Length: 337
Image (cartoon, rainbow, N blue to C red; front, side, top):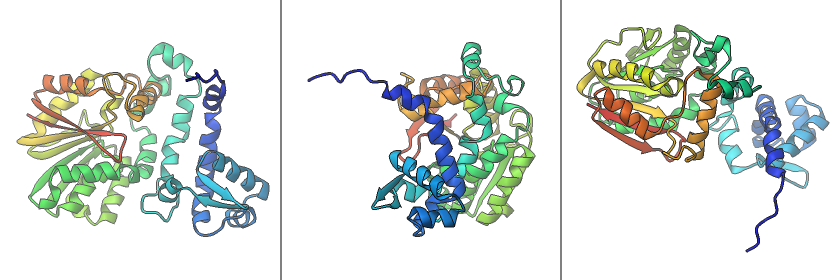
């Protein structure tokens, strides 16, 4: 079998990757995918509906077709299967809102000049505090935009905790953000009470989601840093979702000792994280997440399950189970005393 000759195509694609990010962000802001789903499938129709020039629409749609977000036949555009599910605003699985976070100014600035970041081994943003500077407004963007993307994991966690069985349940939701992990449990269990910790401005957004879900009377805010506020105790479950990756192991252990102290003797700590395998290059989405932490945090990383096992055992958790989820790049670790 002949080996294909070397080609620079992969390098050129990587160097121009920012163009694809900008094109997709633009299309979401124009609600282009929603317009196509509604039947506006030609350049003329899309130009009028989206209030953009015919040339601009043509070039944008052709570019998105090249990159497999659209299809094109006889001058008519259509959504791919993935775009129909995730980029049509009418879809219940719509994820277009995450562009505010993933393609927003904080992340783009963090990657603008990576050389000093790699040399230092951590972010150079915000006085080197990066995304974890106190009450950073980026977490309001996170709370506004990332809830829908977290729903498969939130549903899995609610099922793993047997929320639908309806037993009384007291849940602590750390760094709650959008609040959907705790809210999903509360929706499944009318006897569950949720206590959410985050910055006050972020909790305002989570509270809106709790109101919309009809669980606001069982959802309680604890404003402040998870490292500083008092949690209370006797929790059946503590949720630590998308949080540990911002810190070094010593800081994680400090928090997990506090978590363990807040749990009932038979309670469970639920960690949702990007967890690469020991080779640190698979699964690709989890492994690649380490680069985001390098660019945006002072000491964050994507930790393997073996590393979490060591940290958690040092904190007194003797049973730790890793569960990889089918519909999410993240994984869940269930930890008990």
